[in-house]
Image 1 (cartoon, helix red, strand yellow):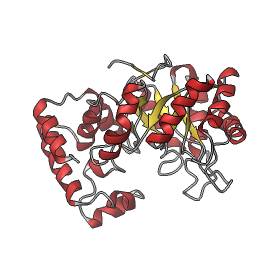
Image 2 (cartoon, rainbow, N blue to C red; image 1 turned 90 degrees about the horizontal axis):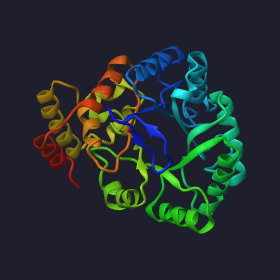
Image 3 (cartoon, rainbow, N blue to C red; image 1 turned 180 degrees about the horizontal axis):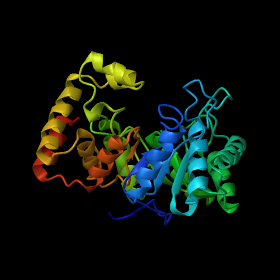
Image 4 (cartoon, rainbow, N blue to C red; image 1 turned 90 degrees about the vertical axis):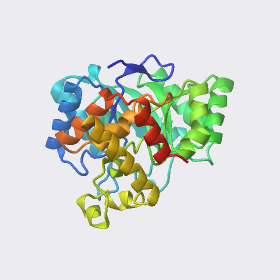
Length: 315
């Protein structure tokens, strides 16, 4: 299992990023600790969270960061973890906010919850196109100078705004976004592959895509309407229950049967064949789910597997 670099930052991560969105939402602190322990015991080191996790679940936000902070303090392993978090989503201010003043304030709050003095990868969670791209970059420049952030990334950016941010970095000698966190999986291919992948490859931007398993749909556990009640993510998974979605599941079923593994493992393995993808983000709420993610990293798909999956998911 070879490490991969985040852009030109020099930061090396293992090729799987554990999503922290479930911590303090669908799993409690104790189970979250177990999942985190299992993840690092397999040799992985990259964890992604955000300040807004999980404000949508009648929480105040910051629950995930707080759990990760307690876990790192308990295990005294901060120096072995590559920690990514994000800012900009509504944390009570009533809007997406990527102003310099707000980002600096949000960073301090995240550092406190995470019980650390630095963030390895700090990301703009969602862009606000009414704010000049250089304003957020100026905030990151200050945080990097102060030693509170090592490198920066973007999430949910349009091609035009990502290009504008890259140009601003050069023009004003500001930090460059070294990562992009886009929606990308076997089902959601077109927008990323057509509009963003080329920009990332050309500018050495590492892709750490979210929804790697399409809200759990690609695991195969949602095949009929009655399955949607299995999880709070069922409503989102329902959007994938289309003719195309079922065609992809059929292809996943065939490949996973051939390799004696789960559909989740195959879906992750496919992502890791993409030259732009550095570390897919996926979350787990059980050790069994975590095991499937780990297996996906080590699974080698042959040409026939890839042809089958590519054809089923083509756009």
